[in-house]
Image (tube, rainbow over all chains, first blue to last red; front, side, top):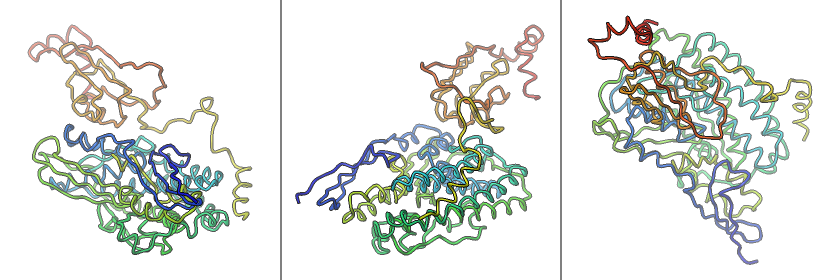
Length: 361
Length: 137
């Protein structure tokens, strides 16, 4: 049969954000996928050269609507490294706490969308209902559901009271119970497995060579997690990267589910450390202006995020370059699409957790 | 195959996860940044909020005593309220209602008089007296 080119996106029911793929199809089997990006470019890197470096904290936070806090965390850590600012330990612990809350709500959002991509609407709604618990925690502790705006250069702006800490612990127990109830459906159900197991296999070698990041890389058996660099307070916490060897869509789903459970354990550890921390300081004083250049890396829910910052003693930075995890995961996506059925394309596109506004900034 | 059935049955006997908005509205959490508001009588028109705002949505004119904010450009980060020296700026916990037309928040207050005159002025007018008491709060 002759080859046909079928457009996938930029508007598609499974896509939360616009990405366009030209799918070259033969007998409903994808032969090639050609990406087209650039629908939501906002020029935020350019804005860094016009705004004060303090104002940019809130601007970079708006690069992504889901892992927003981790963007500003990476930016703040970069500036702090450049200016030699020592962040109080309490602030580092709080940053880690919010970053884990963000990871779990981002993964829950993805797990829901993933269920929706293969038509399991009920599972989608269950997972998003669980996600509301985390969003409530964010709103109560930081004043907003997703874009929490807690980071400032030198520390954090908000404190979590002891009463709130107890409440978070209680919520974590409920959250864990809800996740355990959903586990058997998500990971063992026949319909879920039939749509995900063995689909879009990315071998360990391919993942390494194509530069995959985050759960896509860990789902292919490579134990790489930027949190092990020990930034913020991760150095004081005990955890291992969640790894699966199969490299298919199911393995990526399993990694993300495992990371949600890991986040619950990490939040408990952080709350334990917070209770022991006696220094109430939340932010160090910032004097001077950033000068020099620095590369800072953090682990976002979607994978490794890299910031390159360059300052020359002016209030504005000379250059901010952001390499987001979805940017790294587009080549692996294009490699896993050839050979799959057209009906599996939405599931596989979602399996990398595409965040297009991150990618295009 | 029937793994979800237990969940479905449980959902039949538990309260609904959704509510009939807008008939039933959940109480906001304390500290929720719903919308920016200002006590204009406490404002000293220092312009710190306008300089710190990452969205550049605030304009302050010390000469005319005008404080303006574009609520549609505001990103609700709360930086302005953090930096306000007199706590005139604050966030109410009810979010702004949707609007059909673009409008500005515009307030006119009493700009501070020059230092040597300020002592005499406080005795006569109410607004500067409020300003003086605000930092003590």
